[in-house]
Length: 163
Image (tube, rainbow, N blue to C red; front, side, top):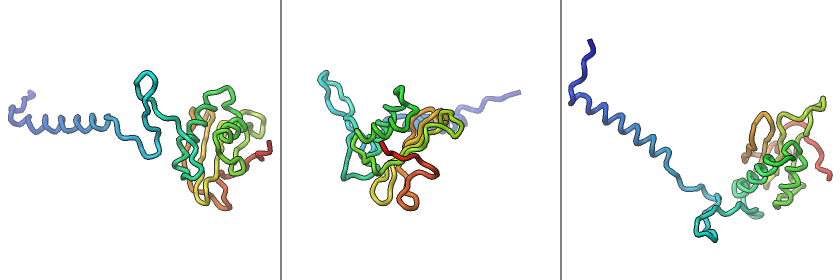
């Protein structure tokens, strides 16, 4: 036979459940935007819209990650999503230096579309902005990573950016 605890014995358990719920709700509340993220600006209708990311020639790789990410997402959403050249051209149009870029092949060695396409921009002497797209990721994924040996950002064979 199951017995119900006395009302006074249930109070600590209820308090513990309430504390857990409050912590869970607090985790769902909005947090301030990280430094370098777009800040709201008033629009003509009086509502706030985030400022678009901008190129920061004198900034860090982290300062430029929002723009790098936006460019990657825009190309990924287009009909050129499987073209490495499209990512490179869009990044150049956004202000990034073509001479500091690397991109992997669009096709596998047997002529199939690449499962994963990677592109990068070397930033300064230590950092790289790296993007990866393709069926294996399902979305544009970007990050700031340390440079590899000899100023490279990507491992393995990359194609010449000679256009």
